[in-house]
Image 1 (spheres, one colour):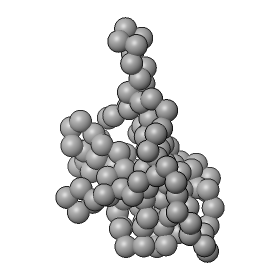
Image 2 (cartoon, helix red, strand yellow; image 1 turned 30 degrees about the horizontal axis):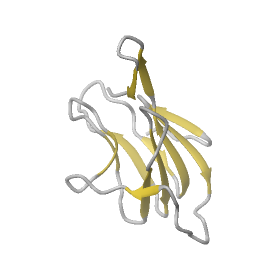
Image 3 (cartoon, rainbow, N blue to C red; image 1 turned 90 degrees about the horizontal axis):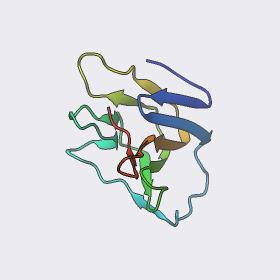
Image 4 (cartoon, one colour; image 1 turned 180 degrees about the vertical axis):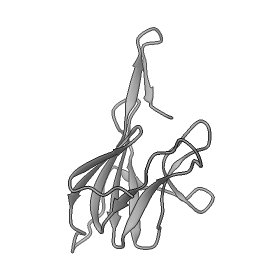
Length: 124
């Protein structure tokens, strides 16, 4: 498992540690709580079903920015307990990333198709 101090990447996902677990929590305007899918918090979707998921949900508050720039997905996560970002693939997988308690910004990269004049979320 890979660890980091400020910034890490797993495929199309970039994780940036913002700081420690906030002592006071306020409502995050413009964010919607991330709903679990089949009992998992899916951070990044894959068209082949090999999603990027948060390993531990207890003490995890993950929110999705309601109106990100076109083609992007931006999330905020507050983790009270250690967790990891895991890639659900048995072969040719991205190494898991250790997440210590704290606050994180997670961005899913985007790609631009000049022919369709369309920006969309990158997937692997």
